[in-house]
Length: 355
Image (cartoon, rainbow, N blue to C red):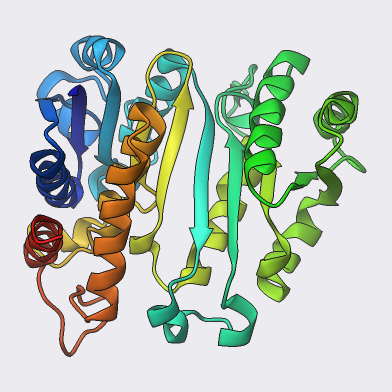
């Protein structure tokens, strides 16, 4: 199979971790006889510095004609620390989501047996936790208009907007995921306060009869935030709106013990994007110390979702499990015996070659 993959390394540690994912993917492709064509493009602060645009037209055109996008990270302190900056790296991420129609962010959350001691929660609470969080990605308060400040600068406003079509699209995706798993769907909203949440609940209730095998529960977002910590194993598939999903998925990510372990997929109407859930970690950029596993696992998710190469994806997951079990990890997981970012990539690629 020939795979056309757009590669957007981005900012901070993005180039380093993406390089390791490519290294591991190439080991799989060599083993299974596939051919990958990687084409790199600019995004984020790097793109602003070179073109003035965090998501240049050339980058968008490449993504549109590619089979999938492997993405690193976006963000730079020089923009974070300047609240008056007119152009920001994160605007590139929002533009990419909107233009590619990336309407659903899929975040699998599963604990690793060899790392239970790294979780901030007790081992008995997290052992066996395995759920998928599905976040709506192109609507809600991040994209709603009007948005801005009053002329005197003393009042600011954001508008949350959802349509039935947007809610139905992601709800059906969530039901489909639930059908392939344990057939339980948790819908997270704030229907006791927000009109958009009441539309969410109405829409889900109208769709639920099409999936009679799936048990559906509705949970207010504040309760969901508590339940994630108290009883993470109770969840199977969770679906929610953009801002709630942004917060809850970051909360859920720490259950595993490290942000550097979790992959994600943003499912698009045109092209889908695969990326680690963590940020650009600028303090580690260029030091060869960042954890590449989330990006490597995002590569596995890409093979499975974009190309239906399930066996190849499983090869990567098996190799990552082996690296964790044998302690071939970066300093965020084992400071005393850590190996470098590139050494982790080399070890996993070599493991795959010897499978």
